[in-house]
Length: 614
Image (cartoon, rainbow, N blue to C red):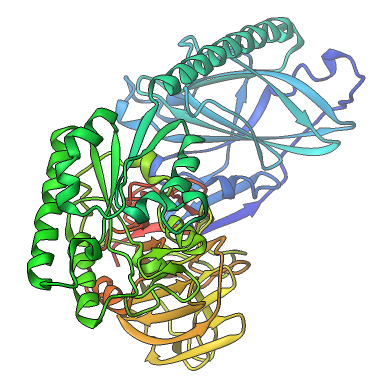
């Protein structure tokens, strides 16, 4: 918002102190106020702008619109804003609902003082004192319809010296009025109203807490793990594998967990014991954890592969027929796999990502790169050790289970809209995501279009902790991992669209950088990410750019998968964040839409984020 502010001094001098008698400040809120408006609802001032005022301006301009200061007089009676602004209108226009009038007043005190203030409005209002919000009715409106100065009591602290009071009053659907007073004749009534509301709020909170507790008890849900030996925990100490680690975590969230896995099972055996072993448990969700090794992929590979796919679809159908939400774990490593077996593993995992079903990418967490277990992650050819099981567990988005509301789980296609983010004036990145649960292996991808050329000026476009994706001094895309740089030969030009990717294998201690699906290179590094940044980094922002389609996975995607993302083919397995960045309304601190059906939150940390169609 481009604002031009001309400052003038307008004030009211009072001899106020903490020990002075009541009549010393009875008229503090009566008399002259300076007003600006009407300002349409779609271009009202941001909270950041309101908090920046130190004295009353003579004029406020927003683009081509200018709002001059006007002086009005307020007593304890209602101030009819509608009649003041539109004196010739015979009736109020409901289309003005939400328009704003800004009222400002300066009060100078000899000593700090706390006033008991009453205010009413038709229909919403927000009070600021010295740039700090102190009271508002933005959520509830005025509640009472008489619009008197005793409708809403609150306490207002004033400092020694000059204090600036600013009130935004927003019009209702049937009128536009304002009343306020801090006169001592209303103090007793205001304190009684305040006490009644406090008691009513405490009683409502008590009832709400009781209802929430009752709902939590009634909404206990159950997860079953239904698979073979790895799903049961084979290879881990005391069988405390990925499934049982997940169960222990979910039990803290009021879930019931049961593991109905049997060593050596495959799709045929699972189907045979579906009704006998799974249905009596009456789970709300089930993770199906099987492998192509148990299916017999080392034999007639094409036949076994087709059998596995066909039967897996049948298992999913049976789950849905019995109102159980299925989640499929993809195929994981085995040291007995040869090259052609690994090809079938990747083929199924790719196909699974196309199904409208939530799934878990185990392969990306423990794969050495050829379908075998990473060297530190296995106890025998077919089973992971404690480390391997834990890495598999970390590839599961824990909040998926409380948020998976659509078992068909479709992902929308990429939109044409963009979000404009970033500003050199900010002190940190515009968008941030902080994993709620421990994360090891991960992948991040996003689409970006820069609005300026940055040759000879380093700019951080995105980051994961101290690992930064840059436009370097050469004007090319770069990756900086703790001072170790990978420099691409891909020049960054203004207005060109780039698909950027970053993967991290915790097991293999490797970070890889991708631009437009191309593997730019890797750096040895082992990370436990705390914060993902977009439009800047930890303590700095980048100049404005356009972003869309932010994806974060709890697994390390391979080169084929990163090329799929480059082609706009979204993958579902272990997806924790899919923020399309097409939010029509963006508010600082308000989480953006996440289509991944997890509880993950990408949060704007700046007012400089807005929907764009550039």
